[in-house]
Length: 284
Image (tube, rainbow, N blue to C red; front, side, top):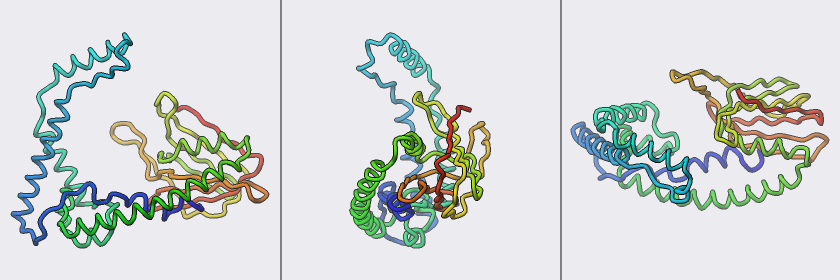
């Protein structure tokens, strides 16, 4: 990758790291005070969930003359009027599970110095001591300015790259663009053949499994992309690999494709393809 690099993605994901957190007084908190913070955060979460639950369906005035939309809206209002009472205990359990998840795995977008400096119990409730919060907010502002400059150069380079792509590769690049930030369900990466299965969506918003196949390839760089996928308890496909960005270049005898994945860490996959390449998409 030349522009949408690991550094680019890491910087992008670090933006707004302080936004989810609320500053609290700088002090060494006792266990009892941690409990008080927990109750404060829990009470706020329950009230926010109650307000969301009690929010009536929203009317789209642009669709008000559509009979099908009106019928759908009537059904939504009927369901709303007959909804069960808000379950406060369920909301409290959701908050507890999120808190425990955050204790096990602190926010990966927080800088390491923040995680090391703050009691993990406080961070797990989306609180942060005020001095740490202010320092992080200042770092956020500097990172945003740096990213805007980097992103501007990347966008210009991307447009230049797209302008160099021959017509018969345009559809492939369009597909790669559409699949950004989608889960990779399977990957076969051999010395002369690459096949990627990526779960995306079609124009109607239905899930589609795209299969991209490249024959007669020459792998130039592979940081160890290795996909594991499984079906969860709800029957949904899950994966430990996300496709992030792709670039395509036509400077040598054969086209080069550069790809970046989040696969237990950020990993590059770069390869040349022959003129006799193939890719396909399929609903599954």
